[in-house]
Length: 321
Image 1 (tube, rainbow, N blue to C red):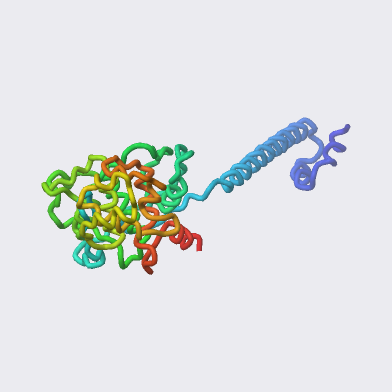
Image 2 (cartoon, one colour):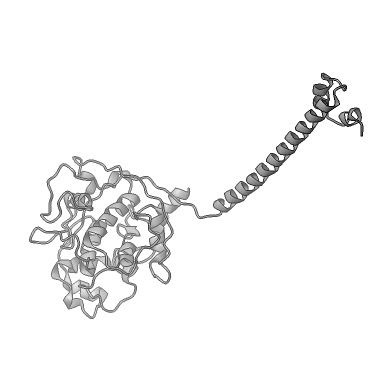
């Protein structure tokens, strides 16, 4: 093919550029055409590569879109401790001198060790609300929960489920309530807040014993006091009558009123006792509470039939709404 014929096959922009040089210098034109052809081939390769990258990006985006949503819920942390001794609660909203907390919300994550755990659905509901800290994919459901850890969970759960007007406030301006919980303790602010709100959560010797495993009777004394918002007197006879536990005599007198009242603190998934332990004939009041059992009690806050009663299902529904 002659140089002029080959030139005639080029597109208009190329034709215009080479026409300026004329057809006389065939070697120069050959070099220009070869250079342009190489550049054109390079552009085609770049376009093909970018098309592949775009396709890969779209595939990745589609895969991410099929993953479960990670709900992040904002909430102010403002609750107080409730203790293993008999709980006497005051109206949390009356703590006008306390400051609100402004902790960052936590993202929900998927726990891989909840298979065959009876309380798994309730734990997942709470996790979607951002209750549990940490990035671990394990909940460790069968380990005992410490008294301090449960107070932290209770504080956060209460403030996640209750309206702003009922949230429990922190009390950073007060001196430490318990001599074994200094302000450097990780759960100090939660223990301090619950105590300031009026819930008796410690021991008669002025200690809280934050690292001690929470017992079943202590759990009832703490959680039921928060549910009903006040202290309850002992009531062994009625406790034994409604629950009919074979080991009812082993329950410490301080907690009998709370264990009795829990029979009536019920809801869609039962009472605290039923959500945590299921159907039982023996209470085993001194037995340590497992993390999965403790978490199940937090799924509902308040008494059955109370207009202020809230639970995870309604909280999650509001988020989706």
